[in-house]
Length: 586
Image (cartoon, rainbow, N blue to C red; front, side, top):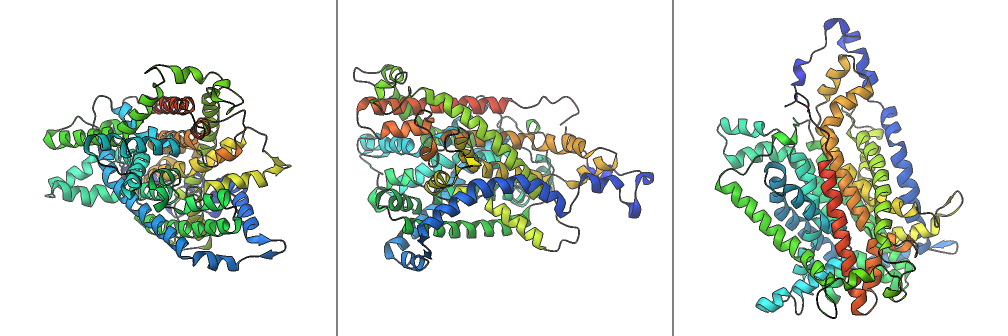
């Protein structure tokens, strides 16, 4: 059932307050700074304590020697030809990866949003699985497909390893789900009758889509593009494994300067450069996209999906299935196939070895299989934290501007915080991990021996996904629906429960799925703070891959397969945990 038109829900004249305004409206929807401040209190404290403080501390140590600052090192490092080359490659490969991902994934977003076909929920879970895999694992899988002795080499004698094409394809593999779930989540709730009305008035199919649907999707597309760009701008494992010595991103160079060369001042300068670049991109995004966001007519997603109609839609569905099969299923199949290998042929040798700590040759203090339980409990805690912090931040950012519409200092601060929320995706995980170790080690925040430290680090990456997934939907809700409910006497809590929650609960589930997935697969910061007796799945996989021997490699592939299955099961469960809709209700 579509939502009622808000303009017909007028308040009775006798209920109007001074100047025709309902006395309950201001109470239900406060627009002042106090409302935003109350909602932003927890998100600001969370980011200040667990992001700004650790990162500033590690950067400060790198630029400071005794009582003096090495600020002159900034110009020296940035002016080096090799660093300039790294910066240029980092920028253009991120732009190319973002454009290619949008080009390939937007048809998938439409198919999963508007078409109904058998296996749809399974397909949605499959395209999200790559998001949780450690980059070292995916790099190895793509190397088996594209490198020496790989599938392309065996069939056609073509090798793509150590080329930029291998990097771009691996980035699409990782980020396909970002576009599908972020854009598709909103696309599924857009009223298709608006586009149909444009066609009745004479517009062609493409013209109607370009003039009606695309502007409505623009905020979600921009949010997805921003997340893809930040992930590829800070790409590490994929570039290190598939790029070879010829291709180096800023993230790889920061790791090299920190862990190999031990040049902390240079690493600190590169971190500041990364801050500046990401901050500029976020500022442009916040300034341009915010102006395009308008209230939309959102409907029940079950009313917009339909069986493929005509040859064109069936061909589109077939092309999307083929793309997912070649680009996503093939690398995953390589991991599964190798997990069942062994000295005597296919079997369960590697899976049985996961039950014993001795089988890993002293790599772990506990059986590697315990990493499954560790990852699940860490991911659940991180998801809860990310949903709480991200939902409050999104609700604050979605509040309407003042009636005057004039820019204010508070408004600029809020828009700045909107951009800052994305910084954890654009900051070196190496920097965050080291920052946690050197700052959260004294009372009252002595957390280095506490299990909660890992979920806190994982939630830093999950919060931006919650905000970017929920914000376009929250801003698309017509404020007149809330105002009509308030005029009719609904309390603020009931207005939120009856108006906002039915419209945003799908986005909330999508956000929960993203937060859970990125928490399961977070590696960069977790590897520095996870205790040896409580490793997560990505950390366990990386440790096994770092040791020689067929048994260690096979166990890494087995753990990766378990990680894929856990992620797919969790996402399928989330997709089915939708509240029942009774007749006449949304």
